[in-house]
Amino acid sequence: MIEVKDIYFTYPTGVEALKGVTLTIKDGEFVAIMGQNGAGKTTLVKNFNGLLRPPKGVALIDGVSTKDVSVAKLARTVGFVFQNPDHQLFSETVEEEIAFALRNFGFDAATVEKRVTWALNLLDLAEYRKASPFMLSGGERKRVALASVLAWDPKVVILDEPTIGQDHRQKENLRQFIVQLNEQGKTVVIVTHDVEFVAECNPRVVLMREGRIIADGEAKRILTDTTLALEASIVPPQIAQIFHGLAFLGFPSDVIDVSEAKKLLVEHFRELRS
Amino acid sequence: MPIIEIKGLTYTYPGASKKSLSDVTLTIEKGEFTILTGPSGCGKTTLCRCFNGLIPHFYAGDLKGGLRVADLNVNEHTIGEMAKHVGLVFQNPENQLFALSVEKDVAFGLENLGMPREQMQERVDWALKMTGIADLRERAPHELSGGQQQRVAIASVLAMQPDIIVFDEPTSFLDPLGAQKIFEVIADLNRKLGITVILVEHRLDLAARHANHVVIMDDGKIALDGEPREIFNSEQAWLLGVGIPKAVRLWRLLEESGVALKGVPISSDEATQRLKEVLWR
Image (tube, rainbow over all chains, first blue to last red; front, side, top):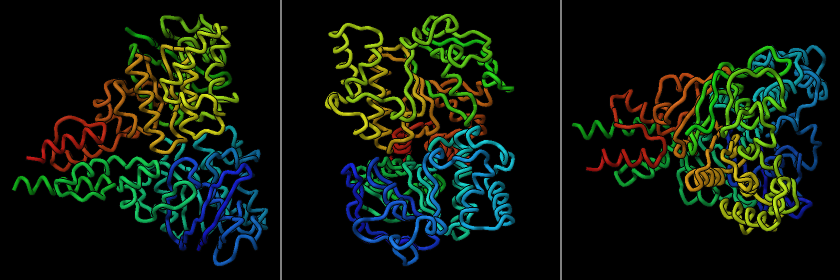
């Protein structure tokens, strides 16, 4: 469980990125953190694994303050996949990249080998085992970064802007993969601007603005609230916009999913005909 | 009048065994707003590098076929000459901005052209005004928000008064409202100034409404080329797995369930309008 209680964070430049954030994420939850550029989203999630430690307030992972544990030890529980894979990758081969953290965690050679193979297969990277990460495409490098974190099987996975640079099909694969991880019991936290992606995943949404949380709840409630959207620089998903315009006909105004939209409209047309 | 004419263009990067562009034929008319999309690695970026002569002058490799941009044969003109006609705006504005003030960044390209000071000042003023950032001129680019930085990058390119501007996923790093505003700036340049826009984009929900031409590439070839509504509603576009706008998806799903509605809406406004017309009697 991740608990942050009234945390503040100011960068050396004087930018106050977090101004009193309180949030609890239970084991097995799927949370999307959204909000405008510079709202403090990435700063917040960096406090979840000790990359940053709050000078004021407290961040607890499974009840233990991040101040009392090393980043290396926290990483075992909370895996962090960076927005830009190049900030994370450095090894000469994909295989080495994935093995690196496993060795640091002290796994024996046989286990390292087993976990590397498992992670490569999981992310469809087996053919690149001996390739240099820097010869791969941006989308592939992102998958290597994800594989290297999943290899040590952290309880919590944080993904910062996972959909940037991914085409439609890769995004759909990623969505299925994330949902699957979550169904297998992992806590998944994503930081994202991608409203349509969130509308398809339907996670809990935490909305931030200027270093504070301004809303927290079901995606279909948060993403369809036009006042909140404007405050957080979000544009509601297309389906939400359409149903907002149809509310005067008695349609619900909290629709974000295209299949639900179809169902409601088909029912309405049937009633009209009969 | 065509501003880009490509005939049977085939290109292989130096040392590569596979062609990145394979027999590409494409015409873009002056003043069009073209969305160029397709799966990762389909050749979009490679094609854009041909528009301003980065291919073949910088990347070398093996280029065959006809390539005319703004009435110039790209093979025979340097990158510097092509830059007067074709501007490029990248995904991440941080990679493009470097000066200490917005004004200096926007003036940089003009200084390189050796433009007289007074004329340069006018151009900079105009470019800042067109992109809505006149009030930011004294600010340092690195202090600005992502959306403001992207406007500075656009202003720097616009100041050169190119005929064509190529935008390579210009909103990937922006929040949705920031992204929407950038698309509006781009649409304005297209409508008000008649600049030919080529937008490379995966996320089409926000951008589709502005386009009047869509090109989908796949595996180094042009897979589809035509009018947006037609393309997004075509079987092939769905099979290629490009990001069809949700409004078009909804229309298709309704049709499959026996509710066939006229037209193909490519924005939520259009879809709402059509549904209102049909439902509100």
